[in-house]
Image (cartoon, rainbow, N blue to C red; front, side, top):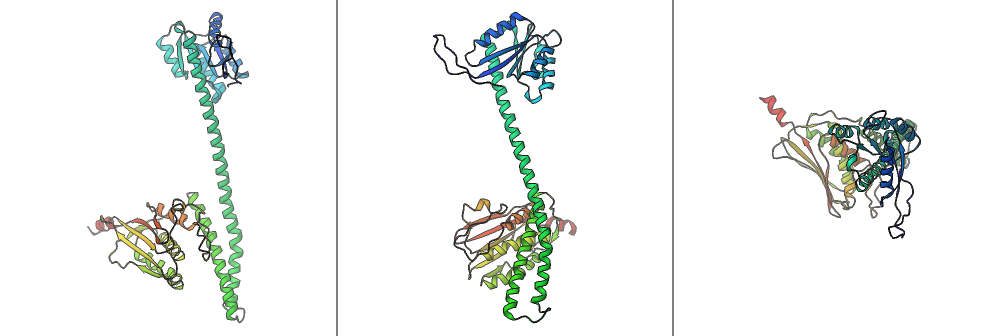
Amino acid sequence: MKETAATTLDKAGNRNATRPKSRILIIEDDLSYIFLCKRYLRADDTYDHKVVSASNAQEAMTVCSLERFDCIVVDYMLPDKLGTEAIEDLNDLLGVSMPPSIIFTADGGEKAAGDAVRSGAIDFLAKRNVNQESLCRAVNNAVEKGTLRQSLTCRIRELETANELLIRRNNEIQRFYHTVSHEVKTPLTAIQEFVSIVHDGVAGDVQDEQKTILNYALQSCEQISTHFNDLLELSRFETGKMTVDLAPNSIYDVFNHCVVAARPAAIAKDITLEVTDQVDLPPVLIQSNRIIQVVSNLLGNAIKFTDPGGSVKLDCLVSENGKSLKISVTDTGCGIDESDLPHIFDRLYQVTQTERKDLEPGMGLGLSIASQIIELHGSEIVVESTLAQGTMFSFELETCVEADSEEAA
């Protein structure tokens, strides 16, 4: 591991820029060769190398257990074992803290080179070819690689720690969703029942004005219940617990259910609700109640963001090859700003409509849930929008044409 930088003098005796410090361990039993290597390394003008030596593998193990080094230079033939074996032992001792290593050999044989590569050494030098330039180049390269590897290891640890924190926070959020929903929904259900009893006159006569107020209370309870259901639904998607059971179903049944539910809101706002009048549409491979949930959400949003007098259209179109059915919901509403489009399917994201003070704020979960339902059906929701002109949401569903043809055959 690098120490603080050191200031050196050039050949003229002037101060050079500071050099980063490094610690080098040389494992070698030839004292004269150790002295030569130390002289070469201390003369290096790139790093300020502090050189420590060990005469055998056992001594190197002791030294490395007490100090940390930026590079280890090992003789292939040590008194007590091969240098490559010493490297393997040091790897076991130091683990991820093991610095890069270089193998020296007197004969430069192919076996030594192969052993060096297998042991994990990053360089191999024949002693007869070693000079100041070659040794400093090899050691400096090893130190730089070790520094990069250490930085990468630290970064990986930071990311792992951050990821563990995110997982823990996510689990806490999931538990919060479940706890709050269960703790609140039970008394909320009781409130709805008691208000309904009063609203329906079971507990005594109720005046029209009182009934109106009670109706608002029931609607508020229903809205709270819907929000909690959305939170639980989203948590199931995020934990991978939500699946779909695909089976052939009629898209007409889906449309009829959604239109009947959406029509009162459209009539209340004087919005024209159009439905494509087509015949002989093929069955689609879906979980019916889930697609009803998606289409209902898209229709509800379209009506919500369309001014009185506008129109909302539910359309479907069979692809040319007959293998898919495109469902679309188009409105003549306020449109979505281009900056909001990439985020509208994000959890809890809400499009800001500052000029629409009349709109009830939601939780930003509906489109996120709808998007994930369609993904489970092997498709995606596509949105096209122009401000002040309108928006179209569309997705495709797989048809059962081929299956029908096989059954007919």
